[in-house]
Image 1 (spheres, chains in turn yellow, orange):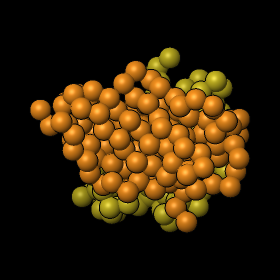
Image 2 (cartoon, chains in turn purple, blue; image 1 turned 180 degrees about the vertical axis):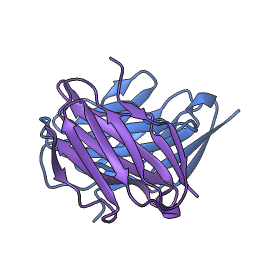
Image 3 (cartoon, chains in turn brown, orange; image 1 turned 180 degrees about the horizontal axis):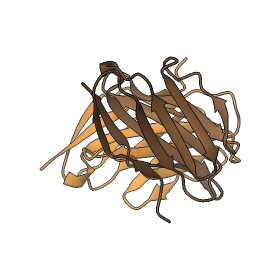
Image 4 (cartoon, chains in turn orange, purple; image 1 turned 90 degrees about the vertical axis):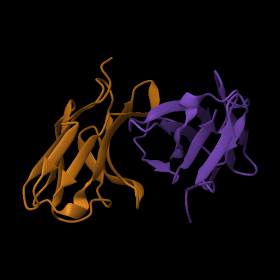
Length: 113
Length: 117
């Protein structure tokens, strides 16, 4: 079990650039969640998918953010254009099967300068 | 109303002593699960312990135990024999429903625990 795999671990980009964060959930998990963590706002749920279908995207800050899950083993979170206030740690988590709880990825630390 | 409330932003404990981190929750769903996660300074989120709403006994995992008081809607984490490596942020979380319905987790704001040598 390789766990939830996120890439990249760190990303530094300039304001206005497109950023794509990637997540591979645990095989067999049918739910996938994207969170953002900042000192000011703590952990915020951005969007989550069940069986590759987006269920709740009410946490997505604005139209600059989009997420896709084209298949059960891959999801992306895209920010276009990026802004300095998007700087945060972005976590992906998955759940399903016998694991009722979340398993988190290691996170992507995004810095927008 | 907040689904999960952690009222202790920061806690200190002497090494080898026990410490209790508070968590209260709010739900009208009779079926739910309660979780605690640890986030050390390295940033990863580590699952610690789980309690189901119908579980008769408090959950335990090594030095971690969950003091589940259903009537009071509290799910406090007790860490016995604190170690320096326990210094971290601790998050309480709840998931409504017991089957894996894909419901989201609700997280508290966290408690920062510092273990003093």
